[in-house]
Length: 84
Image 1 (tube, rainbow, N blue to C red):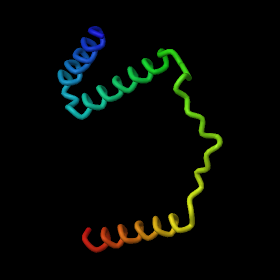
Image 2 (image 1 turned 30 degrees about the horizontal axis):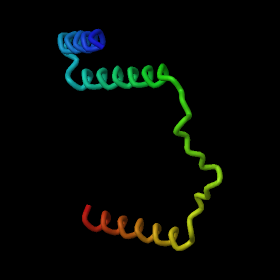
Image 3 (image 1 turned 180 degrees about the vertical axis):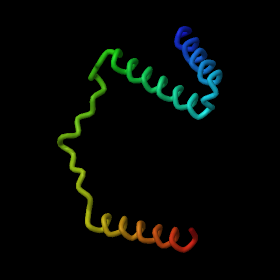
Image 4 (image 1 turned 90 degrees about the vertical axis):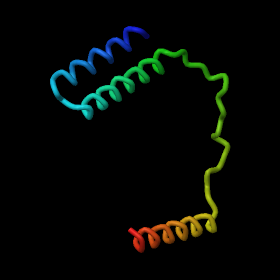
């Protein structure tokens, strides 16, 4: 883990030394952190002991829920259109 921190610090110094700005530095740190997260998740052992099976559940919504959600969306559109 110490090497990763040293690598990020090195990249930070190089980016700032070449005058690329903090935006590039933040972008590089984000990409490096994302790559590290992907590698760690791929290297972690895959266990299914806490698996929840949902193939028997229905995700169908009722008509009243669909109409109400359209109403909420219409109200939000009206509020944004009025006070934007």
